[in-house]
Length: 349
Image (cartoon, rainbow, N blue to C red; front, side, top):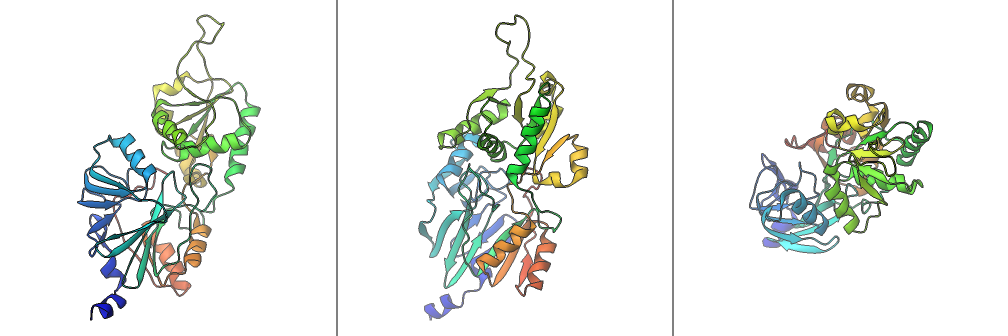
């Protein structure tokens, strides 16, 4: 009788949406819970997915280091590192972490029991990224996908072409500072690595809020080239003259644009690296002169292609443009439903 029950396990008996996040009753754990729980499986280190205060946390080694850097060593009662591709049992549930390609250490989480396999993607992208391991498609019965950019209008251009736009502007305006707004975890390091890949070898200046995470990336083997703090140092040999960073690239959190900190720069060109820069009104509202459409999330075509590739019998859609992707799945003959999960931010991308 036990074998019969396992063979007919329904997906909603294995994972279900709750106010605290996605819960696994047979394994008694949550995936990326939005509040403190006894046992949490974390997909990646962004603060809307990785919160402190859990009794126990299972995550990749890199994600555990990111959480410790952000929250302190005591961010959870206990921690356990999950090695990509290795399966461990939790209350009879087989749990395996697979690369998600979002940021350093990011992972999809596959859970399997009774012949039913569900993959929770967390956040993911399909572009090649020199700062993290690329997304690995995992065939499954149910695919839980994010939907941050799940509208046909969101088709991201080539990342490297966007970096060429930035470097062309730097060459065109050597008297101006190019301030590149990029979120502290993942986007900032990826932009720096892409700039290096394009052949730019001069020092890149960074805001103090980026320093620790950039150091962590470097310690994990990601080459970011020479980085210097964007501080008001005196120019050598020119007594009393402050460095105005003319001709330099400065990477900072987007919020720094409005700070007094930004006033030190020479006629700055405000740049912002984000998938949301596809929306002109957003760029205009932020006063962005040079929008750089570089996203750490899959765009519309990549979301659709990923669903086809993992070939699920059913799709569950989490935070973002849920309705559009659910409708696309239905038109493809794939049953789909929105999970309506709250607590996951769209802006910090």
